[in-house]
Image (cartoon, rainbow, N blue to C red; front, side, top):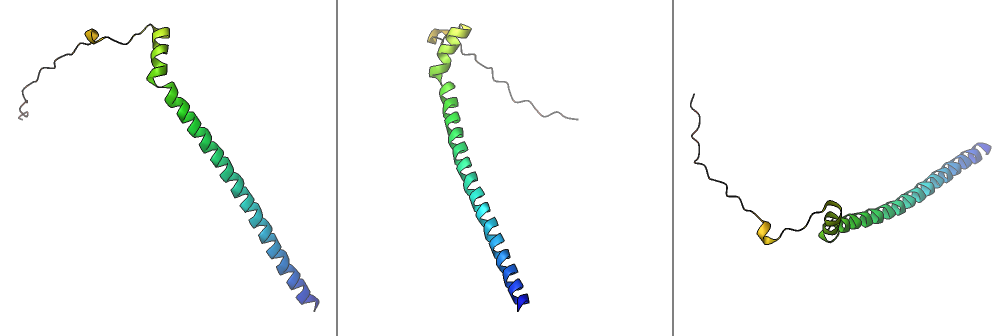
Length: 93
């Protein structure tokens, strides 16, 4: 009779241990998902800030102020004509 009681208690302890481990794992998974969600939100915010910082509205004034650059007028553009060369014949040995 005592043997059966010990077997039952051993089985019950194994079930409780497995459930406890499962609850811990589920909690850890929930925490990691929340952390991932927060990190994805941070990444989206950083990408937005990068897009804003690299826009013409931000870069042009900085280039003008810091580097002394300006946007060229139409008269400042020079187009170079690239001469077309006749197709070369393949080299013969």
